[in-house]
Amino acid sequence: MATAPAYNGGFGRQLLEGRGRVRLSDWYEQYLEAQAQPGRIFEETLTTSQMSVLLQDGLRAIMFGSFAGEPTTWEQVAARETSNKEVETWVELGRLGTLRTVGEGEGYPRVRPELLPARNIRNYKYGDILGISEEMLKFDRTGLIRQLAEDQGARASQTIEEAVYTPLFATANYVKTSADNDVGNNTNATTLSAAGLELAFTTLATMKDPRSGRYLGIRPDTLIVGPRSEFAARQLLFSTQLQRVGPAATSSTADIPANVYGTGTDNVFRGMVRNLIVTPQVARGGNAYNWVLGTAKRGFVMQEVEPLQILQATGADAANEEYLTSDVFRYRVRIWFGVGFTDDRYWYLSSSSTAPTVA
Image (cartoon, rainbow, N blue to C red):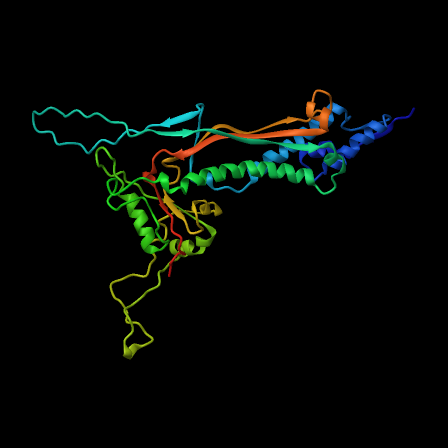
């Protein structure tokens, strides 16, 4: 019997190589056609085992691609560390004071560093199982399976984003007071404004070591706001000039305030904070006008036990129990990490519920 020419459409190969938006249902139909026409030779030489391999690799690639492509901002905030313990204990040495004078013939004083209170951060597993029925595979004509796979990767990425910002906007994690700096608490209901930014900045800039009292020299570089505060923050941080305001108008100059000499118009806040992060995650602190000023990747960590893991049970055979009993292919998605403060002296949280007041 004459053999039909090889088919070069290559749905399975396109799926693996990422060419085009191939519907898995169309590829599955190719598989069924190959089974019904044994005389026809397909380029992929599709068999039952190869079908599961192509399905497995195709959906895994979609999930990983969606995970990597999901827009996130936590990488700009938290230091990323690896972890191999259920609970990581973070310990920091207290800073020694400044050097002492040594008189002629005198011995040098001995110093001994002390440990600051330890911080413990627990790791947690996050994950679930996505089931794709054979009916979905056979009858899908709208890219439903691709959407599910893309959403699975996006969910994993957003889980990390949410986990990072939840403790960052929790007031209970901010415990520094005027005993630790020259200004006051590192959390207040501070309205985002020129005065509010000055208060937060000087609170962090005057943080001291609790043992020696030595200034730490902190210079905050990151401001995190929500979408409701984005435009006010941009105006405050990136405008070239500030509005010039003189004293109240007199009757002779009712519409022209008197000029004030000795003051500039250049925006002194411009360039003070180099990272402006806008995220809806700020609302996790209770309202849309929360904001945080801090030093990127200092005193706050995301400790990773394992990166994104995708396991699958996709064999269309008796070895796949779920397929045998329910005609379902399963994908388990898991991430494993912990998040928390190692030192809150680098961060200031405002729990303000009022809109920014930026002129």
